[in-house]
Image (tube, rainbow, N blue to C red):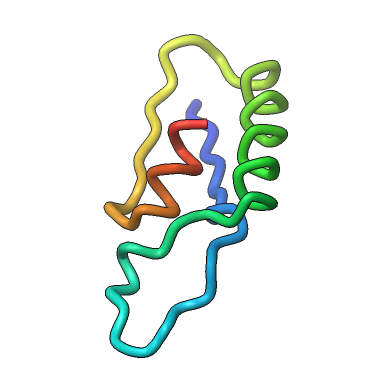
Length: 65
């Protein structure tokens, strides 16, 4: 059996005109959200899990937490 958890990135800065969407970073609030969720996930998930994330900066920041 396999469990699948889908988690969208934490809060990110708003896109500006002409800015590459993949470069948008987390806001300070988003960094806190990611840290809180990571702490919860750490208690829930089994050893040896795999994390797959998009190459978007905000998603990588969220996954690193």
